[in-house]
Each structure stands twice: as structure tokens, then as C-alpha cells.
Image 1: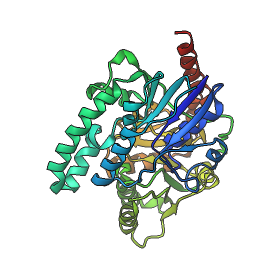
Image 2: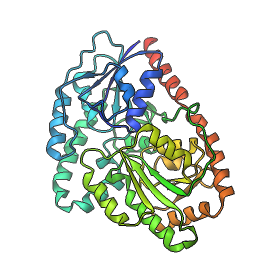
Image 3: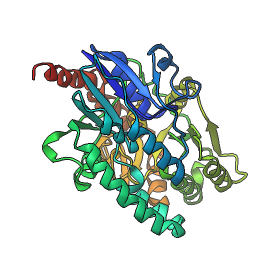
Image 4: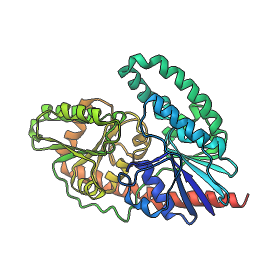
Length: 383
């Protein structure tokens, strides 16, 4: 079967791009990727081999005017779907608007999250707390967006989503009925993730450096860890991730929080090799997001045999087994600090949690993910 895959922006190395890359490269079907913004220098280099087709250009800026213009462009965009058997939309917001003029073939959604700033209460609350003057524009634009988005979602024949948390958001937003939504969680290539069982004295916080990742919590927790447990003075915190457009100010804020102390180290825009090396040697992983949609970094850390300390909410609450592959805690610096101290003071526990995690993540191998997606696409041909 010939399948079209649409996503507005292919320009980062995030979980969204990773899912698309693994799906297209492993599938038994013939895929073509369509996007409105392709930046090969910043995303996974493997995309260069996949023949991406770029449509009318839209900006990556997230301001009201830029997002409105991008949404209008996407809404009016017509993809040439002649000869294709289905359209798959990689959805996390305004990409759903491609459905208005492109539903001559069956349209399937893979939802990473409905637009996060609207449908994730933790993110919307924080946005409004930090931008109180935007309450009225936010309320008006949110209502307009929700109305259009519900119409766009009517064209989805079936919806896959990455977690039960995202499924809940879809249902609460009235975007689709429960019977048309299936949780299909992304994962990792377990054949390429080999634990070294090396535990150097640093905790790792890995992922995109963006305000809703709540990296302030990791830094505050590390300060608290050092204050409460001076016996672990030799430990470091390493913050590693891509600084995307619009996040420079946030990145500078994090560096100011770290101050001049040398035990908090930032690694900006790391390569895949850098990421793997950081995972292999770290003592454990900190995932401070308040309501992470799914969280591939938690799986990757467990795959490398590292325990994960995460907020007891969202995707990590589904993938991390509390007390077995890591710890799920409240989003408070002290709670994170206490969990870090438990690991730092007990290397045998750290190794035991790491071993359990490396076994646990085998169920999330990409081959299982792609096989289920392919099976559904096959079913379309029998209808």
C-alpha cells in the first residue's frame, strides 16, 4: 500500500520525529512524508534518505500571529493524494487542519497530544500564570481553535495515541469517541540499547530544553539533594538536550539557576552519539515534566539499565514501575532529592532497578509498534 504521512514541521530530534522515522523505515508499506517545514540540518539525518516532500512553507515560531498564519496555510493546503491508499497525520496540534481538504482517502491519526497548551491543564495553567495579560486572547483563540479542531477530527477514521494520558485528553476534549482510540506507545530498538552497568556519579536530565519540560525542578531538586545530603558532594547533574527556536531565553534562565557551581553541566544540542554516551554512564535519569505526554527518554534510560525518577503523572506514570524500575514522586524538589539520595546511597538498589528496567522496556520494541500499525493499514485494504 502507498501511505502518505503528514506532519507540519520536520526539524527537531524529538520523540515525534523519532516515531515517524521508525514507522516509515520499518514498515512493509510504501510511505511518502509531506511537511510544511523541513530542516535537515537539525533533525535526524536518516530523513535525508526518505524523500521528504515540502509543501507551502510555514514558520516554526509559536506566537499567536505565526501560529494563526500557519494554521490557515495548513487548512488551505491540498496534498496530491492520487495513488495513495491512506493518509496518516502525525498530530500534536494544528496539523489536524490538513484534514479539511485532504480526506478523499482514509485518514488515520497518530496523536502525540492534542494541542498541549490548550488540552494539558498543567501547561495551560503555567502559561497563564506567567503571561497574565494574555488571558483574554488565550481564551478567545482557544475557543476558536477547539471549534475548528473538532471539525478536523471528524475526518479521522481511527486514532492511535501514545499513552493513556493522551487518550484521556482526546476524550475530554470531545475530539473522538473512546471506541475509535487505541493506545499504541512508541518505544526503542532494544537490539541497539545495551546496558554497560556502569554508574558514574551524575544524574542525567535528557530531552528538549523547553519551558513545559519543567527543567527548573531538576535543578532545584539537585540543589536540595546537595544541601540535605552533603555526603554525596561528588555527584553532578547533567542537563542535555536540543534548544529549539524560541527557547533561548528559557535556556539562559536555567543556566542562571545553576549559577557558577561546577556540578551542574549543560550539554546543548547533543548528537545521538553524545546522548547514548550520556545514558550509558549516568547514575540515573531525572524526568521533571509535570504531565509528560509519553516520554521516550524514560524508556531509553531504562533500556540502558538506568533507574528513572519521574513525576507521578502522565506518560511516565504508565511506563515507569514505581519501586521496581525507578521512583514516581510528587513534583517537589525535596521528593526528587530524597529519591536521588536513595539511589546514591544504595548502589545495589540502583543496579537492581536498572536490571528490571532493561527487561521491562522490551515490550516497547519498535518492531511491535510498527507491526500493529501495519496490521491496521492492511485492514483498510480489506474493507
